[in-house]
Amino acid sequence: MSQELSGKTVLVTGGSRGIGREITLGVARAGANVVSCYRQEGEHIETLAGELKNIPGDHRLVPADVTVPDEVEQLVAGVRDNYGSLHGIVHNAGVISHVPFGKLPLAEWNRVVDTSLTAAYLIVNRALPLLSEGSSVVAIGSRVATVGIPLRAHYTAAKSALIGLVRGLTKELGPSGIRVNLVSPGMIETPEAAAKLTPEQRRVYEERYAEIIAMGRFGRPRDIAEAVLFLLSDRSAYITGENINVDGGI
Ligand code: NDP
Image (cartoon, rainbow, N blue to C red; front, side, top):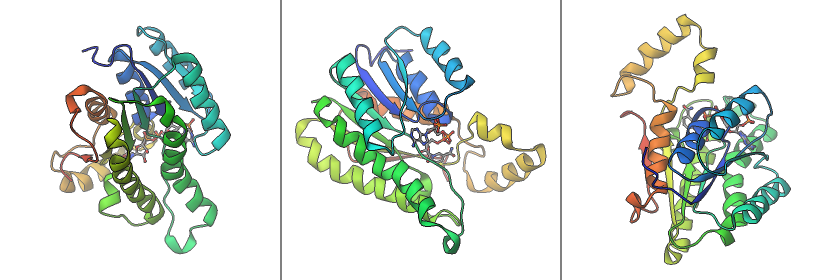
């Protein structure tokens, strides 16, 4: 693995499971110090901490709910005090929610919008003083943001607005040499999601989605992490304001 992020520090939100976990490990393997936040404690945190210990660098797993301003401020203050500056921010935290629109409570709307969109505002707004020329911000969107999907109008709205936030920030931060991009996953099979499927559910899913995914398979967290690593690195030094779909050709 190339050490292209060597000596840099990257903040990842929602780094304890699924796609964020893979991004956390990928960033550390690329030579960066990684600070990765999560909400729920558990064995999975200890396992991830153990894996990070085997990768050179100063890596930290920090409990912080990105929808709570005070917790984001503490998280960012910790980064400032321990590392001084930030090369990258990956806002990956997101919650999946399926509710018919007519039955959608305001609290659920707020939970989804706060985690994907308002948290992106909080993180970048509070961490902006730590970014500088060459820094890279990557938000994790969703392929559904540009197509829509039943039962997920609220999620689609939040992820679409994230595209707008990225485009606006691109113009505002570009003159300072800070890039802002989005990676939009298609259907990614995380280990947790896979474990919840019965063999019959898996068969039905695979048949249904093979028809709409050109590559005929679900994506893997690694597929998303690779795109994020590219956008964090100097290999993408002239790419900003982009939304890269990583969806196997939906
Ligand atoms: P998971 O549910 O597997 O993991 C979500 C991660 O985000 C966990 O580490 C979780 O930590 C953390 N998290 C959630 N809410 C908060 C919060 N308020 N504060 C801090 N951390 C939080 O999700 P995926 O890996 O599947 O998805 C990751 C991202 O990719 C999301 O933004 C999602 O919308 C997007 N995406 C995923 C797709 C897929 O097919 N999997 C498709 C398209 C987009 P904890 O468990 O401690 O709460």
